[in-house]
Length: 373
Image (cartoon, rainbow, N blue to C red; front, side):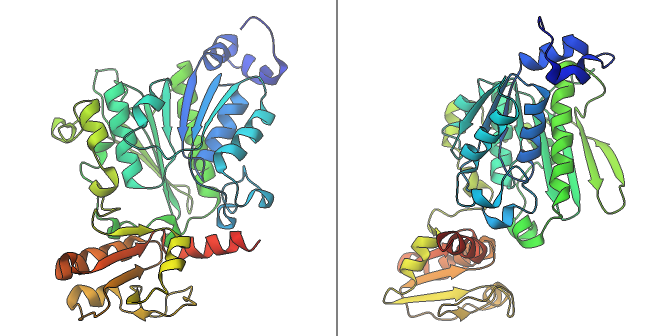
């Protein structure tokens, strides 16, 4: 770095970092996928650290329920695109770097082109479909991947697709060879998360990226760090490379782009229509339509529209006869309603039009609240 920039004065003074380390950051390009609970601290600290080019990809908007943990945003930002809001605030934090904002959902059709331009990818997503997709894209492009995840009071961090000293290289599929059943893994919408936890894990992800870029310290290559906020306990396990897990990764760009990761991870069905909140509200009052709440009795929030409550546990044992041709299902977050739709599909086949509320009643309430602000 030719000129002293007082913004990074504390970095210059660091032993084994100094001007050389700062220059490496300035020349680096890092892509952050997801600008939510994990993405916010990652973006803020990489921006402050002086990473030369930062890409951020997110297609979500700011909701009131985000603000408990996504401290890059404020109440005035509710309803606005996270990618747009984040880009402006990050550029204000550090106008010396380049911020590339992508208001898109990263899919198999655009991931390879997006990731190709960056040195490191940081996965800050919150669902298995996105994690497998990002992992597979990084494997195909030989890109280092910094992984992070949170659940209630516990978080995880790992580095994939980077050879260790012995030349061994692992990826996310060596940790989870096959996607779990979505019903067996609750997300933060259902299970909750203490707001400070994503901040801690996100900072760890940013730290690992900085260490990778500058060569300082020991990184979590082929290792998984698990951290509990309840008692500050942590442990690190080694991840073993397993060629059988790699056999499930698409072999080339054509195979990758043909892979439906939402379907692969049980987050969508080709014969069950996903209804966004506004479409759901339009269709529930159509003739010859029945709306079924598949949550357990007493779950909150209550629905303020006419519906029939048949818990998924009851549907799994006995599916009643349903006369209506249009069946609309909903639950808390959209997972159980999709599973219920698959059960009904097995019974009724294509004789019924089956749809479900994507994102569940939580997404519905957030949409209504945003529209009435």
